[in-house]
Image (cartoon, rainbow, N blue to C red; front, side, top):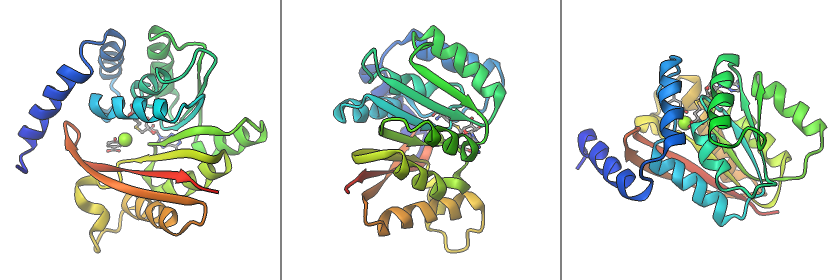
Length: 223
Ligand code: SAH
Ligand code: DHB
Ligand code: MG
């Protein structure tokens, strides 16, 4: 059924059973809303998918591009061991401030490193620190820069690392030949980069749910 109300109901059903009552996540969304942040965090089932991907991966180090209020960050942080590391990059100082408070309340004040500024400035600074490779990179910021973020992810990862790109479908616009907006063109460039890259093996999956009709790309660094 292609009815958004049904997608919502099914997401509510899955959430009720698979990621029930969760004070830290509920509070993160509530305070993000109260601070006027846009309601564009991943859904609970998507957040749980991120956590499971990171756990399946045995991730010890995670990089996120696009923090918002830290909702997806909390899901990802829960996959990490106590001595794990999570760096998350956010353009907006206001969003980052909300995220820092949400992460602290969730118990990740020490583990999560929120860095403010345009990610294309934060990424070269991060690379200069020569961090150990990140095991998982979640790309979820300004979509026009998606191909650049995939390139940076390649520089900051190693064989076996996983790259996830959010919002690659956007109601189907990714395949609209008449689309001219930067988000669609950037996402398409990222898909085509993954498709043609000798060091990446990837796919993309369409999703429906509380966040509408969208999808994510998943790639593994192969060499
Ligand atoms: N990952 C979050 C949602 C992120 S929304 C979650 O699912 O909970 C996208 C975020 O990217 C916004 O907070 C926006 O401010 C940020 N952003 C936009 N352009 C950016 C840039 N150039 N560098 C870093 N962050 C950016
Ligand atoms: C938007 C951004 C997101 O990361 C998302 O998951 C949904 C919507 C947006 O910019 O509209
Ligand atoms: Mg997103």
